[in-house]
Length: 126
Image (cartoon, rainbow, N blue to C red; front, top):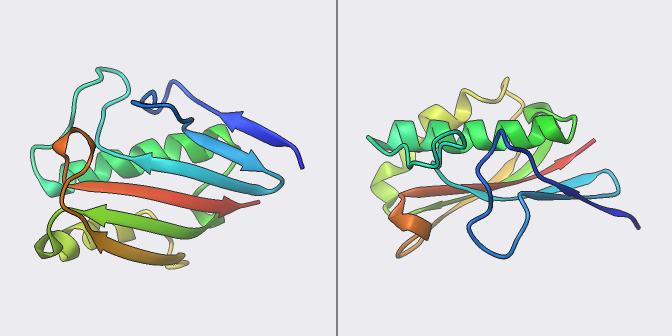
């Protein structure tokens, strides 16, 4: 099976030894995205809504680079530092899907890279 590395300047560069995404066959595996603004490199974390929106925009850019969109997403994982943020994250996250929601789990963790509050990864299929 061919493995194609997907990287785009429209999403932040990886902050470790990984790629933004890997396309294996028709399946795209997107690494977790946090609220880094790809243009400035700064964190957009005024509040959890801004963090979630920027994470989703980064995911959208990677999907676009792979000629996909949110309708191709079959699975997401959301990592959050506080379950009390769950409903606010859901409010923003849900707006990116046209009612065709993927499978998902949400996991509370002690800390995330750069001490953000939310990180989201995705799997999409053409």
